[in-house]
Length: 174
Image 1 (cartoon, one colour):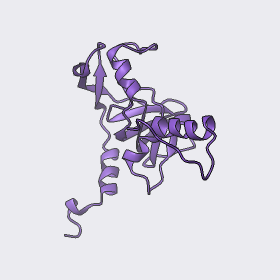
Image 2 (cartoon, helix red, strand yellow):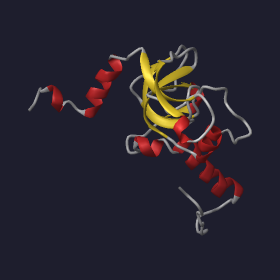
Image 3 (cartoon, rainbow, N blue to C red):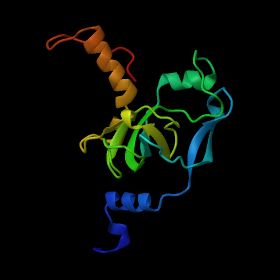
């Protein structure tokens, strides 16, 4: 019924949630390298954006093969333990730090880089890695833009120098 709290649009509810921002969140933490069972969902302190930083309320996180190599300890460059995995995703801007001009609170965004990991309710990013997400692109689609889409785009257009009319075989796409 009109005016009933349960009839609010999703956007209105999300805005209300953002205005009641907690001081803690949940994040996936890896405290030791190993199999998937080392991924633990734990409470964590909500990061606060500093100068040139953006806090994003995550709605979808990209999951890439490299993250499994890192989690297992079988990658050339390993993060310091403990860490939260993930480098790309999509969501709403929750807060912006001093000097941020490219995005604003409550704006839909995708990100191609995170300082604190995207397997979390919130992630902290540099303004340079956060981009507006068009309304016709879902959060799940936006979560793929940073690594998967950019890698495929570079391979097809920069490396292979494909042009209109070429036939392209995408092998092993996931």
